[in-house]
Every structure is written in structure tokens, then in C-alpha cells.
Length: 264
Image (cartoon, rainbow, N blue to C red; front, side):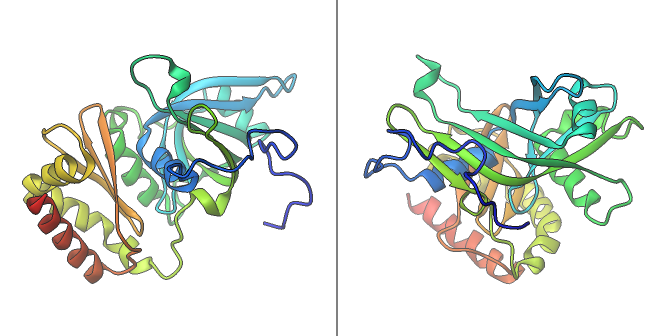
């Protein structure tokens, strides 16, 4: 994609405090990446194909290996018809919790969605990763009118709470997968191995390293930056201390993290 001459979509280059100096304990990139991988449902805003009005709908969200948002939609849905006419869209991923909803972090990701044909080489990977995050979607994912769509991210805007906001480029929120094909190819077997043989270790990761409650935690995805885990409605993201690109390095990393978790 060529360099954009004007401001990125969703950016606030002429207003404060959106681009004021950040608080010392606020890391916009890390917060944005964590929300992008962990939040499982969000608001999809498409452009109405008749009038151009913003049309908001609720969708389940998955991610590709690099973090690109992935959705599964039916051709019978209004938002799908809108995307078929104009792929420009945004997705709002919001943290929920007690108290004022506006005190919790939320991320808006902007870009263009493109449908992934079933015969595409990467469709199987997108399907597997999405269904790992949303297993109930297996009930309808195979229907003829359903298809996966992947966003080519152009920009993002993070609001981490009062006076904690940042405009972000695509590279700020996505995962660098250059040179990581070995890990991407090994992901499926690694996820299956962790779930089939290391449930106790996954629970240790979640409890000791992520501060989550104890439970039946399952691995739902692995990428160069970290590992995603779920326990029912709960989701956590365990970031690796350094980027991983090969299956051998992944095994060593998971072993080291287990040692850290047991010692915590």
C-alpha cells in the first residue's frame, strides 16, 4: 500500500490532549496490541451502501497471525452487503468492567475488509484461528452463505481512559511476521500439544503470569509476539519477552515461561 499523503483515518493531528505527551506508565502500543488480540467481540462500522451513513453492528472478532482483524459474516447480513460495495470499515474493541464504561480502554481499528475465498491458501489458517476463539461458530461456519473477511489495517486510535489516548499506525498494532513462517506453520500442532498435554501449565501461565483466576485454560493461538488463552468467557494474552520466529525457539520459550510461572 502506498504512503498516505494526508492524515491517517481516525487520527487527531490538530487537537489536544489526544496527542499530548503520554503518562509515564502508559504504553499505547502494548495496550493496543493486547486489546486487539484479547477482545473477542466488537462493534463493526461499515458504510451503508445506499446512503453512506455509518452502520454499526456487533460481530465476533478473531485475528490472523499478524493481528489483522478477521470476521465471519453471512451474505444475508446488512454489514456484508455494505462491505461488498465498499470495504472501508472500522472495528471498536472495548474492555468492559465495573463502573463508568469510559474509564476502560478501547481501541478503534480502521482499514479495508476483503473477503477471503474458500479456495484461498490461507483460508484454512484463518478458519482454524477464528474457530479456536469462537468454537460455537462451528455450528454455522460451513454454511454456504458464510465467509471470512480480513481487514488490511491502515490505522488505529486508542483511548486508554482519561488523558490516555494515541493515534497509531498499522505497524504499531500489528505483529511483524517477517521470517516467522516456520512458527506460523507449527502453530496448529503447538496449540494442540499444549491443550492436550499441558493444561496445568496453561493454568499456571494464566494465574501466575497474567493475574487471571484459576480454571480450565486453553490455548487459542500463538504468534511471534505471544500466546492467547481462554477459559470460558475469559481471555488473556501472555506476551513473550522477545519475538519468536521458529518452532524450536517456541518450545524453549514455553518451557522458560513455565519455570517462571512455577517460581512466581
